[in-house]
Amino acid sequence: MLVGLGVASAWLTTQFMGQLHLPRGAMPFLCFSGFVVIAIAFALGGRGVWRITAPIGDLLEAAGRIEAGDYSARVRERGPREVRAFVRAFTAMSARLQITDEQRRRLLADVTHELRTPLTVIQGNLEALLDGVYPADPAHLTPILDETQVLSRLVEDLRTLSLAESGALQLHRESTDMGILVSETTTAFRASADRAGVELRVTLPNELPLLNLDPVRIREVLTNLVANALRHTSPGGVIHLSGEVTEPHLTLSVSDTGSGIPPERLPHIFDRFYKSDESNGSGLGLAIAKSLVTAHGGEIAATSEGVAGRGATIRFTLPLT
Image (cartoon, rainbow, N blue to C red; front, side, top):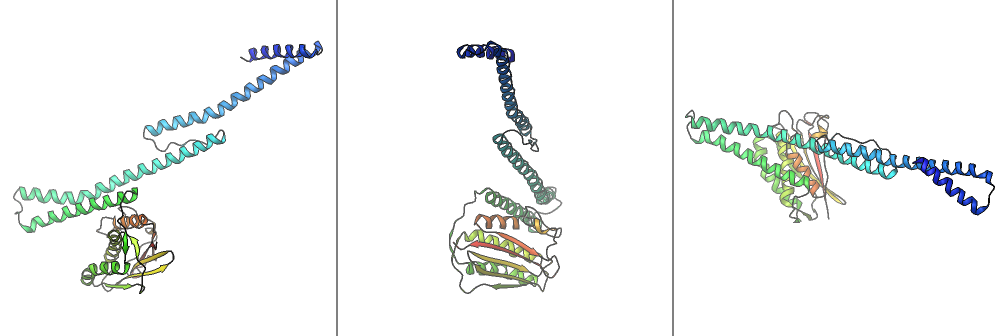
Protein backbone atom coordinates (compact mmCIF):
# COMPACT_ATOMS: atom_id res chain seq x y z
CA MET A 1 0.00 0.00 0.00
CA LEU A 2 2.82 2.37 0.87
CA VAL A 3 4.43 1.61 -2.54
CA GLY A 4 1.22 2.53 -4.30
CA LEU A 5 1.00 5.73 -2.31
CA GLY A 6 4.61 6.51 -3.24
CA VAL A 7 3.95 5.96 -6.94
CA ALA A 8 0.85 8.13 -6.79
CA SER A 9 2.75 10.85 -5.01
CA ALA A 10 5.55 10.69 -7.60
CA TRP A 11 3.05 10.99 -10.48
CA LEU A 12 1.29 13.91 -8.83
CA THR A 13 4.60 15.59 -8.17
CA THR A 14 5.64 15.14 -11.82
CA GLN A 15 2.42 16.64 -13.09
CA PHE A 16 2.73 19.50 -10.63
CA MET A 17 6.33 20.21 -11.68
CA GLY A 18 5.30 20.10 -15.29
CA GLN A 19 2.84 22.87 -14.67
CA LEU A 20 5.42 24.92 -12.77
CA HIS A 21 8.28 24.24 -15.25
CA LEU A 22 10.70 23.41 -12.40
CA PRO A 23 14.20 22.03 -13.14
CA ARG A 24 14.22 18.33 -13.97
CA GLY A 25 16.89 17.69 -11.30
CA ALA A 26 14.42 18.60 -8.58
CA MET A 27 11.99 15.84 -9.53
CA PRO A 28 13.65 12.86 -7.68
CA PHE A 29 13.90 14.87 -4.48
CA LEU A 30 10.32 16.04 -4.63
CA CYS A 31 9.05 12.53 -5.44
CA PHE A 32 10.91 11.08 -2.49
CA SER A 33 9.65 13.88 -0.24
CA GLY A 34 6.06 13.23 -1.29
CA PHE A 35 6.49 9.52 -0.62
CA VAL A 36 7.87 10.23 2.88
CA VAL A 37 5.12 12.73 3.73
CA ILE A 38 2.35 10.33 2.70
CA ALA A 39 4.01 7.42 4.52
CA ILE A 40 4.27 9.46 7.72
CA ALA A 41 0.61 10.53 7.41
CA PHE A 42 -0.42 6.91 6.94
CA ALA A 43 1.64 5.81 9.96
CA LEU A 44 0.16 8.53 12.14
CA GLY A 45 -3.33 7.64 10.98
CA GLY A 46 -2.73 3.98 11.83
CA ARG A 47 -1.49 4.94 15.27
CA GLY A 48 -4.64 7.02 15.86
CA VAL A 49 -6.83 4.11 14.86
CA TRP A 50 -4.89 1.80 17.20
CA ARG A 51 -5.29 4.27 20.10
CA ILE A 52 -9.06 3.97 19.67
CA THR A 53 -9.42 0.30 18.82
CA ALA A 54 -7.14 -0.98 21.62
CA PRO A 55 -9.24 0.36 24.54
CA ILE A 56 -12.43 -0.62 22.70
CA GLY A 57 -11.06 -4.16 22.60
CA ASP A 58 -10.40 -3.98 26.35
CA LEU A 59 -14.00 -2.83 26.88
CA LEU A 60 -15.39 -5.70 24.82
CA GLU A 61 -13.33 -8.20 26.80
CA ALA A 62 -14.46 -6.71 30.13
CA ALA A 63 -18.09 -6.64 28.96
CA GLY A 64 -17.84 -10.34 28.17
CA ARG A 65 -16.54 -11.04 31.68
CA ILE A 66 -19.41 -9.07 33.24
CA GLU A 67 -21.91 -10.93 31.07
CA ALA A 68 -20.44 -14.16 32.48
CA GLY A 69 -21.01 -12.89 36.05
CA ASP A 70 -17.54 -11.54 36.84
CA TYR A 71 -18.36 -8.03 38.09
CA SER A 72 -14.76 -7.37 39.15
CA ALA A 73 -13.79 -6.65 35.51
CA ARG A 74 -12.05 -3.29 35.13
CA VAL A 75 -10.55 -1.48 32.13
CA ARG A 76 -7.32 0.55 32.15
CA GLU A 77 -7.80 4.12 30.99
CA ARG A 78 -5.96 4.94 27.78
CA GLY A 79 -6.58 6.44 24.36
CA PRO A 80 -8.20 9.74 23.40
CA ARG A 81 -10.04 11.84 25.97
CA GLU A 82 -13.48 10.72 24.83
CA VAL A 83 -12.50 7.06 25.02
CA ARG A 84 -11.02 7.54 28.51
CA ALA A 85 -14.29 9.16 29.64
CA PHE A 86 -16.22 6.17 28.30
CA VAL A 87 -13.84 3.78 30.08
CA ARG A 88 -14.35 5.66 33.38
CA ALA A 89 -18.14 5.38 33.00
CA PHE A 90 -17.83 1.67 32.26
CA THR A 91 -15.59 1.13 35.29
CA ALA A 92 -18.04 3.00 37.56
CA MET A 93 -20.89 0.88 36.20
CA SER A 94 -19.04 -2.40 36.81
CA ALA A 95 -18.14 -1.26 40.34
CA ARG A 96 -21.81 -0.53 41.10
CA LEU A 97 -22.81 -3.89 39.67
CA GLN A 98 -20.26 -5.59 41.90
CA ILE A 99 -21.53 -3.78 45.01
CA THR A 100 -25.15 -4.60 44.11
CA ASP A 101 -24.31 -8.26 43.57
CA GLU A 102 -22.48 -8.45 46.91
CA GLN A 103 -25.43 -6.80 48.67
CA ARG A 104 -27.83 -9.23 47.01
CA ARG A 105 -25.80 -12.23 48.12
CA ARG A 106 -25.44 -10.87 51.64
CA LEU A 107 -29.15 -10.09 51.86
CA LEU A 108 -30.04 -13.58 50.67
CA ALA A 109 -27.77 -15.12 53.31
CA ASP A 110 -29.17 -12.86 56.04
CA VAL A 111 -32.80 -13.53 55.12
CA THR A 112 -32.13 -17.27 55.02
CA HIS A 113 -30.56 -17.10 58.47
CA GLU A 114 -33.44 -15.08 59.93
CA LEU A 115 -36.09 -17.39 58.45
CA ARG A 116 -34.42 -20.56 59.64
CA THR A 117 -35.19 -20.17 63.36
CA PRO A 118 -38.97 -19.53 63.23
CA LEU A 119 -39.44 -22.14 60.50
CA THR A 120 -37.53 -24.71 62.58
CA VAL A 121 -39.71 -23.99 65.63
CA ILE A 122 -42.91 -24.21 63.60
CA GLN A 123 -41.87 -27.43 61.88
CA GLY A 124 -40.72 -29.07 65.13
CA ASN A 125 -43.89 -28.24 67.00
CA LEU A 126 -46.19 -29.31 64.17
CA GLU A 127 -44.38 -32.64 63.80
CA ALA A 128 -44.68 -33.21 67.56
CA LEU A 129 -48.40 -32.45 67.41
CA LEU A 130 -48.95 -34.79 64.46
CA ASP A 131 -46.96 -37.57 66.13
CA GLY A 132 -48.98 -37.21 69.32
CA VAL A 133 -45.96 -36.14 71.36
CA TYR A 134 -47.71 -32.89 72.31
CA PRO A 135 -51.44 -32.37 72.76
CA ALA A 136 -53.08 -29.78 70.52
CA ASP A 137 -53.76 -27.40 73.37
CA PRO A 138 -53.16 -23.63 73.68
CA ALA A 139 -49.86 -24.17 75.48
CA HIS A 140 -48.38 -25.92 72.42
CA LEU A 141 -50.25 -24.04 69.69
CA THR A 142 -49.37 -20.57 71.00
CA PRO A 143 -45.61 -20.89 70.22
CA ILE A 144 -46.49 -21.80 66.65
CA LEU A 145 -48.70 -18.73 66.33
CA ASP A 146 -45.96 -16.56 67.85
CA GLU A 147 -43.42 -17.76 65.30
CA THR A 148 -45.81 -17.14 62.39
CA GLN A 149 -46.16 -13.58 63.68
CA VAL A 150 -42.37 -13.28 63.74
CA LEU A 151 -42.30 -14.39 60.11
CA SER A 152 -45.06 -11.94 59.22
CA ARG A 153 -43.19 -9.03 60.82
CA LEU A 154 -39.97 -10.04 59.09
CA VAL A 155 -41.64 -10.17 55.68
CA GLU A 156 -43.35 -6.81 56.23
CA ASP A 157 -40.08 -5.23 57.43
CA LEU A 158 -38.25 -6.52 54.37
CA ARG A 159 -41.00 -5.20 52.12
CA THR A 160 -40.88 -1.75 53.74
CA LEU A 161 -37.09 -1.67 53.55
CA SER A 162 -36.92 -2.73 49.91
CA LEU A 163 -39.57 -0.19 48.87
CA ALA A 164 -37.84 2.63 50.77
CA GLU A 165 -34.37 1.81 49.42
CA SER A 166 -35.64 1.58 45.83
CA GLY A 167 -37.54 4.86 46.09
CA ALA A 168 -40.85 3.11 45.43
CA LEU A 169 -42.31 3.67 48.91
CA GLN A 170 -45.41 5.84 48.73
CA LEU A 171 -45.57 8.45 51.48
CA HIS A 172 -49.02 9.66 52.48
CA ARG A 173 -48.06 13.10 53.64
CA GLU A 174 -50.29 15.29 55.74
CA SER A 175 -49.95 18.22 58.11
CA THR A 176 -48.76 16.60 61.36
CA ASP A 177 -48.27 17.81 64.91
CA MET A 178 -45.00 16.17 66.03
CA GLY A 179 -45.76 16.87 69.68
CA ILE A 180 -48.86 14.67 69.48
CA LEU A 181 -47.01 12.03 67.47
CA VAL A 182 -44.18 11.79 70.03
CA SER A 183 -46.68 11.72 72.90
CA GLU A 184 -48.64 8.87 71.30
CA THR A 185 -45.45 6.88 70.73
CA THR A 186 -44.22 7.22 74.31
CA THR A 187 -47.69 6.36 75.64
CA ALA A 188 -47.59 3.10 73.67
CA PHE A 189 -44.30 2.19 75.38
CA ARG A 190 -45.16 3.41 78.88
CA ALA A 191 -46.37 0.03 80.17
CA SER A 192 -43.35 -1.84 78.76
CA ALA A 193 -40.98 0.73 80.22
CA ASP A 194 -42.63 0.48 83.64
CA ARG A 195 -42.30 -3.30 83.62
CA ALA A 196 -38.62 -2.96 82.70
CA GLY A 197 -38.06 -0.34 85.40
CA VAL A 198 -37.03 2.27 82.82
CA GLU A 199 -38.13 5.90 82.94
CA LEU A 200 -39.44 7.57 79.76
CA ARG A 201 -38.88 11.31 79.51
CA VAL A 202 -40.05 13.74 76.82
CA THR A 203 -38.69 17.26 76.28
CA LEU A 204 -40.11 19.22 73.37
CA PRO A 205 -40.50 22.94 72.59
CA ASN A 206 -43.84 24.38 73.60
CA GLU A 207 -44.82 25.20 70.03
CA LEU A 208 -43.68 22.92 67.25
CA PRO A 209 -44.52 23.83 63.64
CA LEU A 210 -46.76 21.46 61.72
CA LEU A 211 -44.76 19.23 59.40
CA ASN A 212 -45.82 17.81 56.05
CA LEU A 213 -44.98 14.14 56.48
CA ASP A 214 -46.35 10.60 56.64
CA PRO A 215 -47.33 10.22 60.32
CA VAL A 216 -47.57 6.41 60.10
CA ARG A 217 -44.00 6.10 58.79
CA ILE A 218 -42.50 8.62 61.23
CA ARG A 219 -44.29 6.87 64.09
CA GLU A 220 -42.60 3.70 62.85
CA VAL A 221 -39.23 5.47 63.03
CA LEU A 222 -39.87 6.60 66.62
CA THR A 223 -41.17 3.16 67.57
CA ASN A 224 -38.04 1.46 66.25
CA LEU A 225 -35.75 3.90 68.04
CA VAL A 226 -37.56 3.67 71.39
CA ALA A 227 -37.85 -0.13 71.17
CA ASN A 228 -34.12 -0.37 70.42
CA ALA A 229 -33.27 1.89 73.37
CA LEU A 230 -35.55 -0.11 75.67
CA ARG A 231 -33.83 -3.38 74.72
CA HIS A 232 -30.44 -2.02 75.75
CA THR A 233 -31.38 -0.09 78.90
CA SER A 234 -31.18 -1.79 82.27
CA PRO A 235 -33.68 -1.29 85.14
CA GLY A 236 -33.25 2.12 86.72
CA GLY A 237 -32.20 3.64 83.41
CA VAL A 238 -33.72 6.52 81.45
CA ILE A 239 -34.84 6.95 77.85
CA HIS A 240 -35.15 10.58 76.82
CA LEU A 241 -37.00 11.86 73.74
CA SER A 242 -36.20 15.46 72.90
CA GLY A 243 -36.57 17.85 70.00
CA GLU A 244 -35.47 21.24 68.80
CA VAL A 245 -36.08 23.43 65.79
CA THR A 246 -32.90 24.28 63.90
CA GLU A 247 -33.83 25.92 60.59
CA PRO A 248 -34.53 24.40 58.15
CA HIS A 249 -35.05 21.19 60.14
CA LEU A 250 -36.69 19.74 63.18
CA THR A 251 -34.19 17.56 65.04
CA LEU A 252 -35.51 14.72 67.21
CA SER A 253 -33.28 12.68 69.54
CA VAL A 254 -33.71 9.42 71.40
CA SER A 255 -31.11 9.00 74.16
CA ASP A 256 -30.69 6.22 76.68
CA THR A 257 -28.48 5.30 79.61
CA GLY A 258 -27.98 1.75 78.41
CA SER A 259 -24.96 -0.32 77.46
CA GLY A 260 -23.84 2.00 74.67
CA ILE A 261 -22.45 1.10 71.25
CA PRO A 262 -18.80 0.05 70.86
CA PRO A 263 -16.86 2.35 68.49
CA GLU A 264 -16.18 -0.46 66.00
CA ARG A 265 -19.92 -1.18 65.69
CA LEU A 266 -21.12 2.40 65.47
CA PRO A 267 -20.62 2.77 61.66
CA HIS A 268 -22.68 -0.39 61.00
CA ILE A 269 -25.76 -0.06 63.21
CA PHE A 270 -27.95 1.11 60.31
CA ASP A 271 -26.96 -1.85 58.14
CA ARG A 272 -29.56 -4.51 57.42
CA PHE A 273 -29.54 -7.44 59.86
CA TYR A 274 -26.70 -5.92 61.87
CA LYS A 275 -27.24 -6.44 65.59
CA SER A 276 -25.33 -7.09 68.77
CA ASP A 277 -24.79 -10.62 70.04
CA GLU A 278 -27.21 -10.10 72.93
CA SER A 279 -29.98 -8.61 70.79
CA ASN A 280 -33.05 -10.71 70.06
CA GLY A 281 -34.39 -8.40 67.35
CA SER A 282 -34.28 -8.95 63.61
CA GLY A 283 -31.62 -6.33 62.97
CA LEU A 284 -33.91 -4.40 60.61
CA GLY A 285 -35.35 -1.73 62.91
CA LEU A 286 -32.59 0.85 62.55
CA ALA A 287 -32.16 0.10 58.83
CA ILE A 288 -35.86 0.78 58.32
CA ALA A 289 -35.66 3.96 60.42
CA LYS A 290 -32.83 5.25 58.25
CA SER A 291 -34.65 4.45 55.01
CA LEU A 292 -37.86 6.15 56.16
CA VAL A 293 -36.07 9.26 57.39
CA THR A 294 -34.14 9.46 54.10
CA ALA A 295 -37.39 9.05 52.15
CA HIS A 296 -38.68 12.17 53.96
CA GLY A 297 -35.58 14.14 52.98
CA GLY A 298 -33.95 13.94 56.42
CA GLU A 299 -30.81 12.45 57.90
CA ILE A 300 -30.14 10.12 60.82
CA ALA A 301 -26.99 9.46 62.84
CA ALA A 302 -25.90 7.82 66.09
CA THR A 303 -23.36 8.80 68.73
CA SER A 304 -22.07 6.82 71.68
CA GLU A 305 -19.05 6.74 73.93
CA GLY A 306 -19.27 2.96 74.07
CA VAL A 307 -19.43 3.05 77.85
CA ALA A 308 -22.08 1.19 79.84
CA GLY A 309 -24.40 3.59 81.64
CA ARG A 310 -23.79 6.42 79.18
CA GLY A 311 -25.78 4.74 76.47
CA ALA A 312 -26.26 6.11 72.99
CA THR A 313 -28.11 8.89 71.20
CA ILE A 314 -29.77 8.61 67.81
CA ARG A 315 -30.77 11.87 66.15
CA PHE A 316 -32.74 12.40 62.99
CA THR A 317 -33.87 15.47 61.14
CA LEU A 318 -37.05 16.26 59.23
CA PRO A 319 -37.47 19.23 56.88
CA LEU A 320 -39.75 21.95 58.19
CA THR A 321 -41.19 22.52 54.71
